[in-house]
Image 1 (spheres, one colour):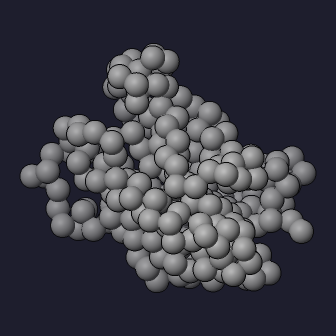
Image 2 (image 1 turned 180 degrees about the horizontal axis):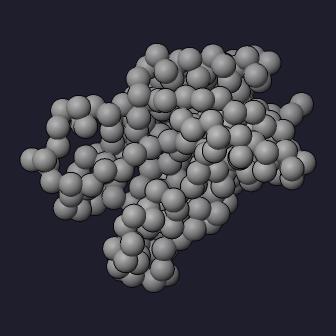
Length: 244
């Protein structure tokens, strides 16, 4: 039976690269994001490569929007979603004193609340079937303090803890929950960082930013049976930044 994979934030960057690779693995990919035109482009690329895909527009800001996406994904997947990749996220940087409550809530809404309620809606069904995989996208700055990155980093640190908690909760029922922790990665979203991205990456042994494709390969590994004995892991794909 063809597996169904829901990839949030998959109209660009790491999410898109992951969606395309899961499509190449033979999964029916549900592409999700805010921009329908970009979503249709990703779907067309997957189909052109011989895969199966559909787009669902979702603005993941709260529990209701997460539940709505889960409901539509289950409808498209004939009642099942076998793989969930929580890739959607925003990463504003700035001083703590300059953060508004509205901005704070928006970051936590997308980066923490949406994955939480997507897992709440989809993981129990995986557990009933005795198999499934959840992969969360975190960040290297969830592991150490960095000026101006407290808000973003704290949301991803929460996702790291949730990864381990969900692995303990759902793992005994056959659902593997893991995370990928990217370092500086060159995507559409980080293009505005310019040379700052290269400077950040220079601190790692690889000495360069990663690509969305390189991160996506790790996501696909954790999402498939190649990682059948991996539960609760946070896999660094950061050019070795974890080592320094």
